[in-house]
Length: 132
Image (cartoon, rainbow, N blue to C red; front, side, top):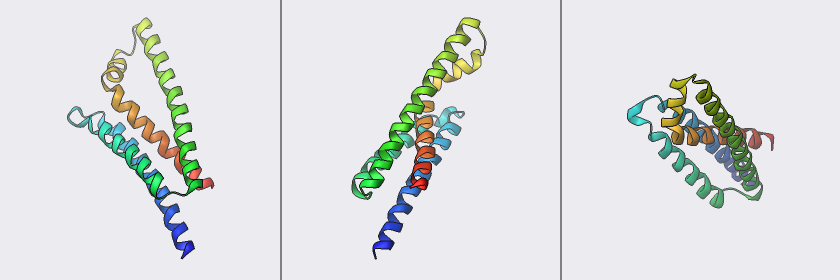
């Protein structure tokens, strides 16, 4: 009985990370369709909320620590991605190049940020949950 419970919890954590990864990929894909670009934001928010609620109810202490490490690493990588993007925007503005890319990033930055966060969280979470 205990083995079934541990297996179900491990399956739940892996399933949640796959779902977060899917949400990030889907969010990035819908950014190119103007009619549904805000859908990425809603999917990302539902994902983060469900992950937070599920972590309190269904995960044991070790899995909660792994989830916290996933969030921490994902936010660190997101900060790096945002700094690189900011640098790119500044350089492209000064050199007056890549105006199409710059305008796309400017008009989709919220959806892109949420989607990249979900993508990073899914990738890092899968790696951490697989290692332990």
